Amino acid sequence: MEEVNQTVVSEFIILGLCNSWELQAFLLLIFSSLYLITILGNIFIVLLITADLHLHSPMYFLLANLSFIDFCLSSVITPKMITDFLKENKTISFGGCMCQIFFGHFFGGGEMILLVSMAYDRYVAICKPLHYSSIMDRQKCTGLVMTSWIIGFVHSISQLALIIKLPFCGPRELDSFFCDIPLVIRLACMDTYSLEMLINADSGVLATICFILLLLSYFYILLTVRLHSKEGASMALSTCTAHITVVVLFFGPCIFIYLWPLHITWVDKFLAVFYAVITPVLNPAIYTLRNKEIKNAIQRLRC
Image (cartoon, rainbow, N blue to C red; front, side, top):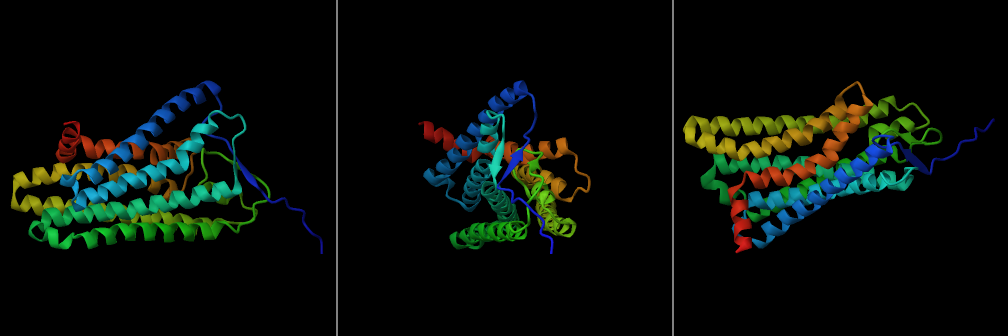
C-alpha cells in the first residue's frame, strides 16, 4: 500500500487585518488604547460594585459578572493581535490556536446566557416588583451565573472536540487576526462540509435563539408596563435600552459570521473586530453613562 507523506501543521500563519506597515502602526495605537480602556473600565465596574454596598443587588451582581466576562473575552484575542502588529511574520502555534478557540467560545457562550439572565432579572424587577426580592435571591443569582459558566464550557468543549483531531497537513494561512473555527476548519486535509455546517449551526443557532428570546422578553416587559402606566413605560424603556443595545451589538456579528452563507473577508474581519474588541469597550460605557446608581456610586467614591 502506498503511503502518502503528510506533514503535520505545528503552527498557523496569521495574515492579520492589513499589509500596510503605516496602517498597522495606526491600528496598534488604536487597539492598544481600546484594550487599555476595556481592561480599566471593566475592572473598575467589578471593583465598584463589590465595594459599594448600595450596588449589592441582583442586577449589579450580574453586571459585575458581565464586566468580568468582557474583560476575559477581550484578553483572549486582543493582546495577540496587538503584538502581531509589531511582527513581520505573524504565527500562532497549534496549541495556542486551539486555546483561542476554546476560551473565545467559552467566554462568548457564557456571555450569551448571562445576557439572558439579565433580561430575566429585568422582567422580574419590572413585571413582578413585589416578588422581586424573593425570586431573585442570592441563591438564584449565583445559580444563574454558574449556569452561564457551565453552558459556556459545555458549548466550547463540544466545539473544540470536533476540530482538535482533524488532520492539518497542508495549507496553514488564516486570513484573519485570530483563530476561529470557520477559518481553521477550512484548512483541514479532508472534506469538512458536513462538520462545518454542524459547528456553524451549533454556534449560530444558539446565538439566534438567545437573541430572539432576549428581544421578545424586552418587548414583553415594555408592553406589560405600558398597559399599566405611561410613566412606567418610559422608565422601563430607559432601563431596557442599555440592555437591548448590548444585545444587538453582541449578537449581531455572531449571527452574521456563523449563519451568513457568503463569506466576505473584509466584512468577517470587521465583524470579528467589533465582536472581540469594540463590544467589550462599549459595555461599561453603555451601562455606566445611562445608570444613575452607578453615577452616584462614583460620586460617593470621590467623597
